[in-house]
Amino acid sequence: MEITTNSLAIGLDTVWVLLCAALVFFMEAGFAALEAGFVHSRNSLNIIMKVLMDCTIGMIGYFLCGFALMYGADKIGLFGSSGFFLEGDFTHLGLKIPIYAFWLFQAAFAIAMATIVSGAVAERMKFSPYLVFSLLATVVIYPLAGHWVWTTDGWLNKMGMLDFAGSAVVHSLGGWAALAAVIVLGPRAGKFNKNGSMNVLPGHNLPLAALGAFILWFGWFGFNPGSTLSGIDLNIARIAINTNLAAAAGGTAATLFTLFRYGKADPSMGINGTLGGLVAITAGCAYVTPISSLLIGTIAGILIVIAVPFFDMLKADDPVGAIAVHGVCGSFGTIAVGIFAEKGGLLYGGGLDLLMIQTLGVLTISLWGFSTTYALFTLLKKTVGIRVTVDEELEGLDLAEHGMASYNEMEYNPFATIQNLSTIKDSTMNLK
Image (cartoon, rainbow, N blue to C red):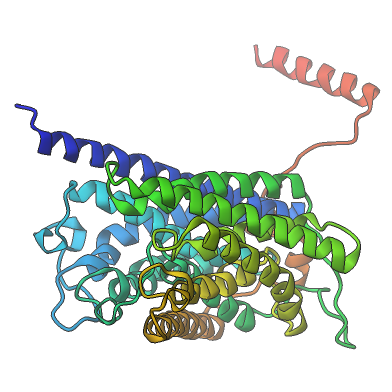
């Protein structure tokens, strides 16, 4: 095959998108570590299984149906109607890369949206009903929202809504879906007392949660710059630095705010503040300046510290802070585009038009995520049930739902260890 300038550009773009798809998919490892660290040890295996099933069931569902509803041809601006099983003509998308590369990148986004809910419902939800949600989230809930914003036929896209990499389509959608799920599910046993006071139920491994946050931060360099779909687009450098600055500002603001407000630097707030900055900049990373990114990240970090106790006050029990991180910061970040965008933003002389469009868009996406999830969880609650029993909850979902524990260690005793090794040796000899 003769190599031309055009074929070389296509090849570079394809490699770029595949690399970024891998980075976004690797974010699932970050979600798994983050959520496992924020819950009790007796539920850490269960939460990892939920994230794993988002990757498996969600990926299949998005392949069979979700991608078609999201990116199939459409004449009314509501949903696609072609491309099921990734078959058919996708020339209407105007892609310069193979459809398979584009699908892989988008599939990683789809499962990320579902995974946002997994942490919020941790420690008390049955495993099987969660699989139903994971499937429908990637087959219907996420694809329709994405279609409205990210396709030329989508009605919000036609209005001029800007959501470069998904503060609304991924994060607001997932965050407010998480709130709906938590409301229907109810709080964990022992979280709230009869007098309305709250008990702190700390996670078992904050260093693991922090590692998860670092992995998510790393993966975000695929999430945001990769949304250019081009490795030769020079704007990827600005997108990357905007992403990084917002994360740094969010983590700094949340940590300092808790330090000055409570006298202690809360690690969980610092972790979630960093993630909140990343979520908030995702919509506008391609449209704002680095200075604006610092401001957006700073506000997001402060919002985290305010939002987490606010939802606790509402008795919306969210063990990992997903509602605050994704719902609140995703909504703020989407609206912030209407304020800080260099083209059309309020602070740059663009008036209120873009701000109003962004507000309408994020309200629509959030309401869609909340209402569909609320209806689905209510239906599951009335049919198959969605909560484990109190005894199972106290025992832990690792044993109750999967029949094994995450950690199978014993307190160190040299004599017990020697005796155990002797037993193992004897049993091995008997096998011979």
